[in-house]
Image (cartoon, rainbow, N blue to C red; front, side, top):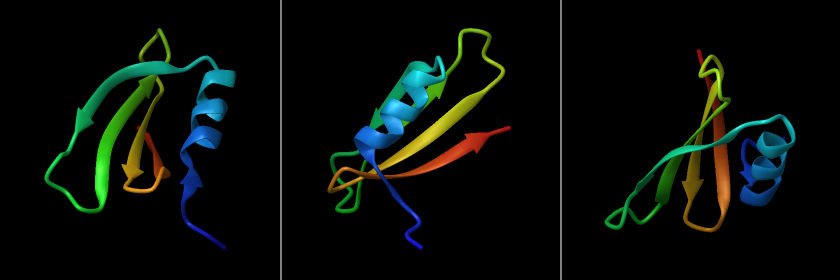
Length: 64
């Protein structure tokens, strides 16, 4: 079982459930991590963190 998702599949999952991009942190000096993205619903109760890797793969975390 792979532990990562493709970036565009994760974005589609979040878009389909009413999440929108809240904040992006870019990393130019990291050879592995490209950026972190925070996705949230309008009410702010649910939030996801995407750790976007160098080759458009992500680790997705639900923040509680």
